[in-house]
Image 1 (cartoon, one colour):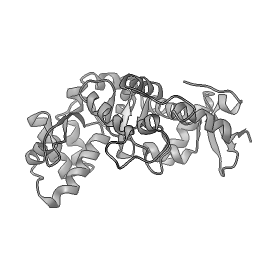
Image 2 (spheres, rainbow, N blue to C red):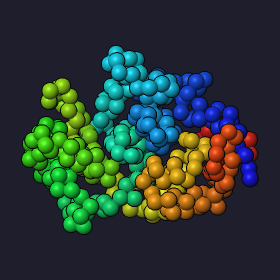
Image 3 (tube, rainbow, N blue to C red):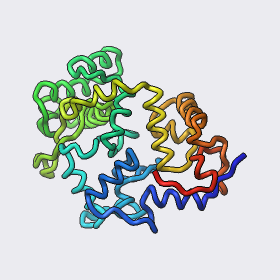
Image 4 (cartoon, helix red, strand yellow):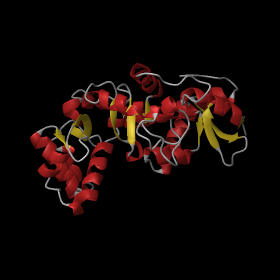
Length: 292
């Protein structure tokens, strides 16, 4: 079985994650260029998930600071400042956590959803099949009818203002974002903290997204996303692919097998000091340093 050096993998991830000694991201333009390189990344580091995050790329490999004046929190302003400007796609996508996606990669995510470019009809199919909650339906219909709404006004329009509906409302926002039905497009000075996301329908904000996604097959979309994932991590186990994307293990294994057949990955790799079998970038296994 081929073996990959843990030190070589760490050096590779130092580049893609922007860990020391790689230069940290210094400004919004560098952040955009990095997201475009990676294809997608989390905004914050997520426990139990290995994936580049903007926080780490800016602040270093350390926990997210509680102090509001921590210099790493400059990322918050960059993220809010980009809302509505179509610099990247932002929403709670991977693991229903804040995710930054390049505009080139977004259609591949969209191609794996059940959205077909008809915002007035697509959600009803999912709801009638019992895969969309009543709360999510009410939230979506409120935005569909009223246009972009901040969180406070959205709760009123969806008739979900009671304290008991807090969790239902928040889950609805997460589910609708993860399925590329709504996304935050701005920030309003509303609510107790004078800070509230403004949400809109995805195809209103990105009207060309369905057409771009229509040209992408399911297998092509999965291979594209998994390929970008491995170019960020260098190596991973199939169960990690399944966990991040929410794909059943059989599908995740099938996608990895196709990338192996294409020569992008090498299968059944051992990682020094780690248990189990890994799939890894073939160039890394061959001892080469690559950046893509």
